[in-house]
Image (cartoon, rainbow, N blue to C red; front, side, top):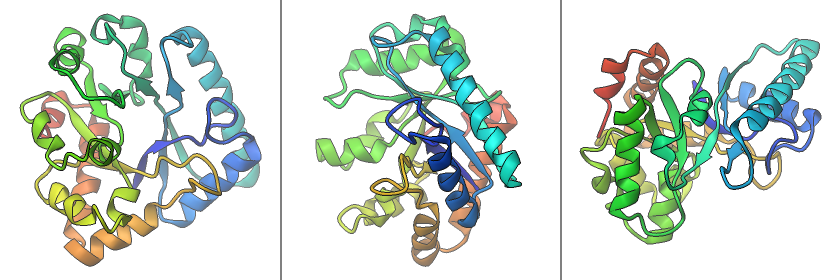
Length: 243
C-alpha cells in the first residue's frame, strides 16, 4: 500500500529533522507493509517560492535515497507537496511541479476556517483551468474542527479527491463516520501524516487493521484500487473516482 501523506523528508518542514529520523520513519512504514510513500512537505506561497521549494525538496530526497541505499532498504519515494490554499491558486502555473509524481493530482491543504463559495470555486478552477486534480488533505481534521459530519457532501459535484488521516479511523468519536464515508466512496486514499517517531509517528498498520476488522478486506482492496487508478495517470479513470 501507499502512504499518501508523509513528512519524512529530512529538514524541509516541521516533519523529520534529520536523515536518521527519516530512515527510522521509512523503516517503520516498511514494517507495516507500506512499500511507497508520497513525500508531501508543506508549501506556503506567502513564505516560499516554488523554485526554492523544489530545490530543497530534491536535495532532501537525494539525501534520503542515499540513506536507503546505504541501508539496503527497498522503498519507493514519490515527490509531492502539501500545498496550502491561497487566493489565486487556480491561476498559479508555478505550482504545477508540485503534483504527485507523474500524476495530474496535487495534495491541497484547505484553510482552517469556514470554506466560502469562492474557495470551492478555486478548487473547481484548479481542475478546469490547468487540468490539475485537487486531492484534499486530511478532510477529517476539518470535520472535527468545524464539527460538520456532512462536510464531504459539500464536495459533491466538485472535481476533487479526498485524503483522510489514519487517525480518523482510530478516533472512537469519529470512526463510525470514517467507515461510513469509506463505504460511500467519499474517501479515496489515506495517509499517516507522520511527522516524527514520537507524537506523530507512522501508523498505517493500525488503521488498516481497524478497517479490515469493521468492514472486511474488500475495502482495503478498494483503497489499493484507488491508488492504482491515481498512479495510472489516466485522467478519465481518475475522474470516475470523484464524489
